[in-house]
Length: 178
Image (cartoon, rainbow, N blue to C red):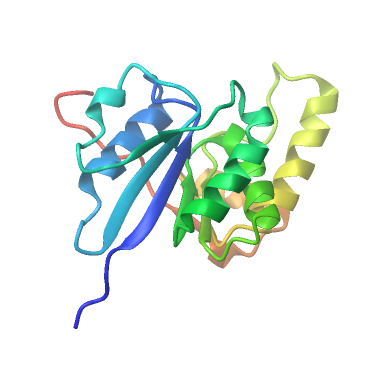
């Protein structure tokens, strides 16, 4: 007897036209339905939401910003009880990790970091705070996905994460849409 597909919930602010949005749309389209039942949780609508396959349930949280979405995310995790929850967005990762803890969720938590830990256009305070918040949040994750080996090395070195939890998954190539 085969096991039922694992419920995988992707959490996103919206499906606009950014790179992470395209990655989410691609994963929702190409996940093997014999093994996975993908779902999508959004804060708001986006320009490429029409690319979500018809068999993928889409739910919207009643929150304008990810920072105010924590109660709605906790309720989502408690009410829906997914087996896996995924964020492909640096700005969503810490909030989702916090909601995962507060909900006492048993779902596997997968986050994806897509940017460096500090940036020249951020304030000195943010450049100090961002790595600290991510270190705390990413320790809760079962897996951290990054698009490059360089970023994987940076996360392991600067956030003191176990190398075995950081996995390089290059961005998908979308044929005619590139």
